[in-house]
Image (cartoon, rainbow, N blue to C red; front, side, top):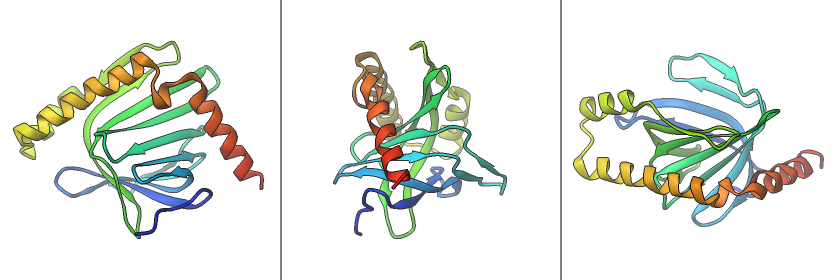
Length: 177
C-alpha cells in the first residue's frame, strides 16, 4: 500500500476489539507521513458513529498516529488553549480504504492548564471482560497509558509547545494553496 502524501485526504476508521466499526472521520488532511507515523488535521470534519449518527468537528485538531505505540493523540485547537484527547488504541494500519485502528476505551484528556484525567475506566473493564481481552493485551494497554502520561509530563512529541503551532501553520499553508 502506497502511503498517503502531504495534502491528501484520507478516512480514519476506529474499530472495537470485536471487529465492529466504532467511528469514522471523513476527509482528514494528511500533513506528514513516515514509515511509522502519520500527522493530519481535522477541521470541520464529518464524523459518523456506528449507530449512523453524524456530526461535524467544531475546531481544528492535529491528529497523530504511530505504528509503535498503542495510543493516538488529538490536539484540539480551542480559544482557551490546546486540549488533548488521547485514545488508548492499537497501532494503526493504512490500506486502500482508510487509516484503521482498534479503540480500547481508555482515554487520557489533557486540559489547556496541563491537568490530565484518565477516562472511561468502567467502559474499559466492561469491554475487557465482554470481549475477553487477553492478559498480554491488558498489560500492553496499561503500559502504554504509562508511556503516554510520560510523554505528557515531558512535553514530548505532540505535547511539545511548538508542535501544534508548526503543524497548524503547515495546514493553513496547504489549505490556502
